[in-house]
Amino acid sequence: MARRNYRHNSRGQTGARTAKAGELIRRVIASELELIEDERLELVSLTGVEVDRDLHKAVVYFTTFDCDDDPKIGEAFEEYRGTLRHAVSQQTSLRRAPELEFRPDVTLRSAERIERLLMQEAHRPAGPEFEDDDGGEAAE
Image 1 (tube, rainbow, N blue to C red):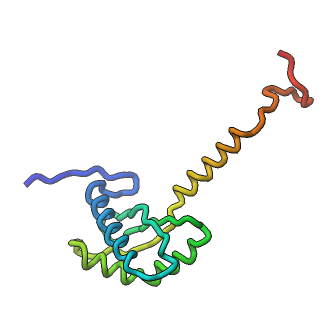
Image 2: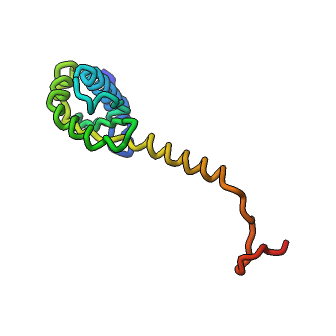
């Protein structure tokens, strides 16, 4: 029987196996969130799951419209951590359900912030291109 060799990425993860497990865990948790009636989790989107190589720990990334709600959402995920882990255990063929850790995904917010800064810079009035040490324009 041929054995596949997957290269490890910089975090020590094997690409295919952990990516497949992460996507499976994300789908299970997303479907369970639809069943939970908690206002704090209504507008939450799961953006990804990173699973370590031995499948003992999974970091679930989430995003919301309002970053001020992150602490409340974090508390809600802490309350439902056991329920969600049990669902992963029941709905997957993993030998052991990984420990779940929930973190806000700051990637989208960082991209939005950079976009705003670029837009501000694009609308800024043009100033003198070259100035000498006295603050006046330099001779060409």
